[in-house]
Amino acid sequence: MSSKCKAPRISIGMPVFNGHACLENALDSLLNQTFTDFELIISDNASTDNTKEICEQYAKNDARIKYIRQVENIGATMNFKFVLEQAVGEYFMWAAADDKRSPDFLELNYNFLVENSEYVASTSPNGFEGQNLDDGNLINFALEGEFYQRLITFFNYCWLSHGIFYSLVRTKVLKGCEFIGSSFIAADWAVDIYFATKGKVNRCSGGYMISGVNGVSSNSNAYKVFRNNKIEVLLPFYRLTRYVINLTSTMSYNKRLKIIFILVKLNLKAAVYPLRCTFFSLYNSFSSRVKKITLGNG
Image 1 (tube, rainbow, N blue to C red):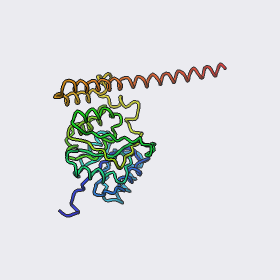
Image 2: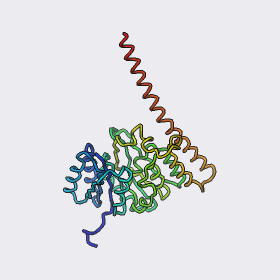
Image 3: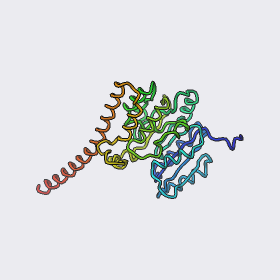
Image 4: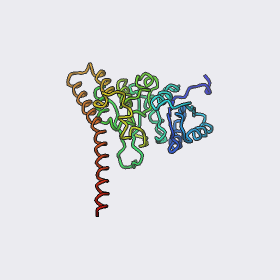
């Protein structure tokens, strides 16, 4: 096969909707990688800002970019699925339109996966926009050991698991995940746990990824947005809970009990959170009114 027809070793999928504010920085961090044998698949989810113009200009200047604009908005989760379906590389990575990676991110994680077949994914330490990289507060947990240990480790850090979801993954493994394209609370966690069922997930000591902080998951209304049925009012992680309980069916009684206890705590925390937000919103509104009345009478 000639070099012109040879598939890239890595496919990067970038689903985007109205990402003009941060898109250029995200694209630059990918196109300036020291590892260059990749394709970048951008799926524009019918953006209404100037995302289209930015993508077209970048695609004009770099042949590795495959820009596709959806005729209508297909939803965020289906857009993630779409870019994966277009991938032809042996390895795949999602890239959010507000993420930034160190120039050596692909090189470090690609080399690791090539040399360690028992690992299905690899990533670098990650943090969030606004953090100082020198503060030592980057997230660096890996999913290693037997499956039970990988599961326990994940739940210990599940609220900080963005870096796992945005790992470099073996494409064939990822395309076998039933949750891709599904929209439910903690669907990204389900994907991470799926990784753990297939093998280990590495965390390189070098490189980094910085996530944006304005995604839908950061919204206090996120549980309501992704809620599919009434039971999720009381058990927000209902579908995730069913999945994990089925996965642990062959574990010992003590191990399974510990996992169930973790799931119960997670559901309780998530169920109470919207109530706390509502309470504090009402409290602040009430306090504001009292303050106005007091000042008015003063």
